[in-house]
Amino acid sequence: MRLLGWLLAAGALLLVGCSGGASAAGDCEQLPGVRPGLCPIPVEERVPAPVDPLPVVGEDRELGLDAFAGQVVVVNFWASWCGPCRVEQPDLNEAHELLPEDEVAFLGVNIEDAEANALAHIREFSIPYPSLYDPANDYASRFSGVGPRNIPSTLFIDREGRVAVRVFGVIGTRETTSLAAVLADEV
Image 1 (cartoon, one colour):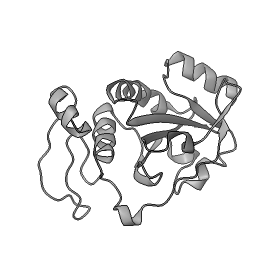
Image 2 (cartoon, rainbow, N blue to C red):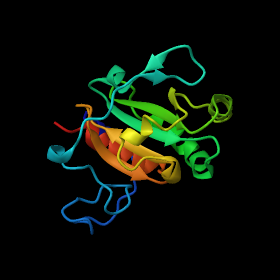
Image 3 (cartoon, one colour):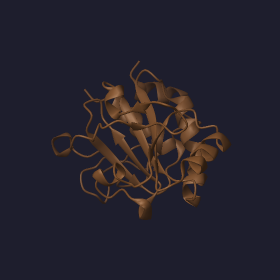
Image 4 (cartoon, rainbow, N blue to C red):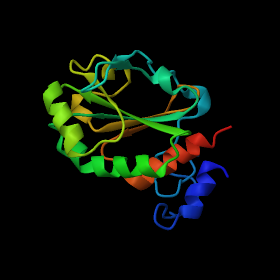
């Protein structure tokens, strides 16, 4: 069964229907459980995401987006000192648990932080997926609009490695699972 169908079937807990029709953003269809106007970028307007490997917080290895080829990737930019990042982390953990790992991967990017603080944050929230370490915000700045003044930011990378959705600010479980499911179901 396609991922969105699976989520809808599992649905009452996850997806709450909103009024249908076009959003204020134009011809963007209202997605279940997603704030109005938040929808995927049209395929022809998507740009490739940078795939450069970075060190993984607390590990002796590097990782890049190319490791997730063929999957939808939810990339969350955060810092331990960011209050809204702390608020949204339990929802991201829950979305990670709900989405099938073979179709949707999660990757954190810790920016402008001390690695010890980032590692303490990861342990405190039991973050179940890896986070890249970007202390000077070099990698994050390659994603248009992402930086320390607008975190948390969550980007959804489609199966082709292109930025498909940008969410600036806190994102909840329902929005994360809905957006990931729509992208996973793209043909």
